[in-house]
Image 1 (cartoon, rainbow, N blue to C red):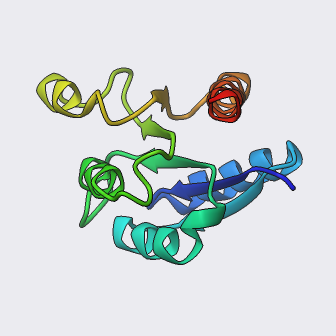
Image 2 (spheres, rainbow, N blue to C red):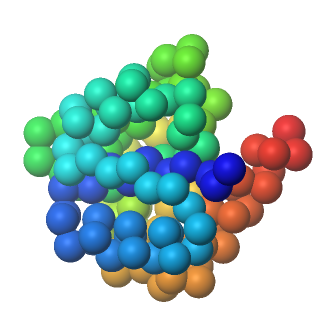
Length: 130
């Protein structure tokens, strides 16, 4: 069974691109256009999700709030999370320090496909080995 990835990003073009790339690589992809929608999907499908790609800057509930909610749940705290950022660094440095222990890695958008896939595959291999 292919690994299942949940992509949460309010940029519809980024989600479309992400879905195309990930499906081409054999992943099953679920997507949400807001933090609240992503958390609802995680509640419904959480047992089948292997990794979360999570945008930081979203309208309403931002990525940090979503990350905190995911990691505070006994059911989902083990899920690897890759943060997606539109900047060349992870937004505000102090915020990043506050949340660094909760996420596994990050990728700058627009992302280099090889870099994103490399990070996803590395985290999934680590999860399988654990």
